[in-house]
Amino acid sequence: MSTSQLPPQAASQTLTLTPTQAEDIIRTQLKGHSKSTVRLLTEIKNKNTAYSYTPSSRTYIADISMYPPQPKPLPCSCFITIAAPPTVTQSLYHTNSLLTIHHLISQILAHTSIPLPPPILDASLQHLPFHVLISPAAPLASTSIVSMREARSRALVDEKELIRVEMQIGAFLGQMHSGVLGEWFGLPRPVDEVDEGADEEISAPAVEVPLGMGLDGPSPNYPSESYSWQETFTHLLETLLSEFEAAKSPNFTLDLPYEDIRRYLSRAIGSFLFDDVEVPSLVWMTGSEDDVYVFISPSSSPSSSSTGSSSSANSTPPTAGIAAILPNIAHALWGDPLLESFFSSSPSLSTSSTEHEGKPGPCQALLEAYLASGGSPPIVFPRHKTKRLWYDLFLGLVVLRERGLGGTDAADGVDRESETVIDREWALELVRRTVEGLRDAPCY
Image (cartoon, rainbow, N blue to C red; front, side):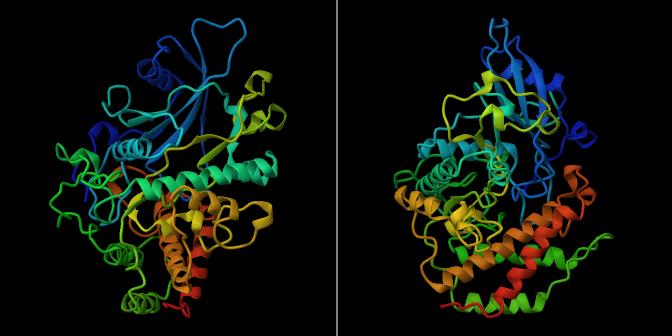
């Protein structure tokens, strides 16, 4: 569990970022922007559908006016994520802090060829009572990019271009699952507790010791750590089930057949369903089309009412494809690559082109790029489909937990009960549908 305390000033502060604060961060952290100003600051709000949403962090995109002023203003922007410092939590399950996220991203960049700019971490608490993660400034305007989900739903991007993006996502996941590996399974330890030298490479190439871990094996202080993925996953799942079963929310109670679920789980454990995973991969888990931003043409850009700014001919990007991937890896862990939500057995969760729409699992373009980039076939036998059902259940419980149901990390100062019912309904449906599917799911 995390043992770092929430600073008193953070406990009383609302998790929000003002243009003045964003400007101060940009001038301090970004080279060449000591006199730049923030023309527009827009919060990215996607809690209705984003699996990676967590109330303890906020992400913004800042449109920057550079100094000295250019004769013909050029687009410039950056992403800024703020989060409450690590808190004390008694739960086995916890989300990753920005310090941990920053370190995980550094490992991804070190062991893959993903062309993403390294973000800058400010955990000094000098500018804000929060930790800050800021991306390097990029030559694009906020109106020239949208999430992949929005681009698909509003037909803002050509279908061929969406397929290209799906292939880029598949390549990214394939490289990450095969290149960013750990010694054992479990949640990453909070970075603020990492011992000196804990990140040294071990003998196998492209393999890192998981965050905060030495070479002496899993620690009893971190119950999720294990050499067995079955042991780790069932421990985490049982933790969430117990939290929901014991939750006393005045607004909602998750009515599930807990005894039946545990009976199905016992059957899966007895069949060693999860024991076919030998090497712990870094798994994004809650990554989705909400976290991937793509370029759009100015004529297709959202209106000022939805983005807060107008379109400009100068915002036309020189290239196409993925513009940015948000650093939303608060739920990343060392585990089974099949745990990725992009491999979901639920049609509503999986990435899909039009020709794939309505079918479970990853689309063909994503899968082909994944396999070509080092990934292994995620689903081969019927037992793998059953495993994915369990992972859908786990994902649904994590999503509901972040929206105020079940256990919470009360010390983060965030009111999860303020989340609206509509934000939860799709996750509730996922959980109910998955439980029904597990009743007769094969374990062979």
